[in-house]
Image 1 (cartoon, rainbow, N blue to C red):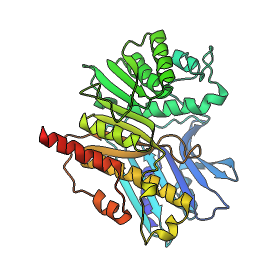
Image 2 (cartoon, rainbow, N blue to C red; image 1 turned 180 degrees about the vertical axis):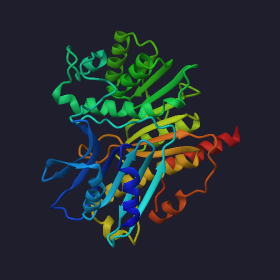
Image 3 (cartoon, one colour; image 1 turned 90 degrees about the horizontal axis):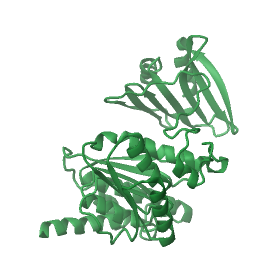
Length: 387
């Protein structure tokens, strides 16, 4: 554990943003510990928030004691994530006690720790500041207060805008940016994108929302007109058949069901979109295809096979995008306690990215699957060669 001690001594100081210890060995004891620096009476201490029995308990440690405290916590945990102003680190402890550490340097990082003792969560769209589309969508009152029953939706919107904030360097202010939102639904997040990028950040953007429900499209177009959002338009149509534009800078697909997500991703690749943000849903396709004698003891349980199929589906989607020249991350969209399916695939086009070997085929052959995304991208490449 000496390498863990060295890591803690280098990271757990005034540059720490936060640390999260999780995956407990004993399911009856402490389940998670969150650590962050706070100022108390002018002195910096480290607040350890312990979660057990559906309750949270706070313990404050001085700087000269915190490393020993974390070493003690880690005798009961198998994972720790650390975020500092300059680095991120992931610590994994195997069942045999082997420690694996993955540390990365964050370039151009400006994030700093909030040292307030009782800090309030800072949202991009703040409570108390009236946002018309949030009012009409039932999330906010006329006074700017968040409707209690809609607070999860408010958090989701802000979490999505954080992902948008991260990719701002990919969007050019000197030209119009076209964003296509597949399966936009009631368009909470579509309006949030327009409001954030155009109203708050001053980008010249054009958003096209696409959905199959005629009444929803009419409603959203009415709201866009009401707010004076001249460059946002909602259309009735199917993802697979849409040919309304020849170039798109960013593609968003949120909860497009099953293979509709694959069609959206393939379209994005065909357009050479700079950014793709996708929250997949209802990944049924591979669940009906997966076969493997080695994994049959696991896959005979329907629930486990369904979850495995969802993970394999999204893992292959991410890998296909990597092979098409994108830097890809698979991220948590909202807290997993709300739903096990809310992950987000974020892909940023990298013109300098070197072509990698096809890593999807061995996995597909092992599981006897043929995902739609692979077929669509193969057809796209064949069409390009023919033209």
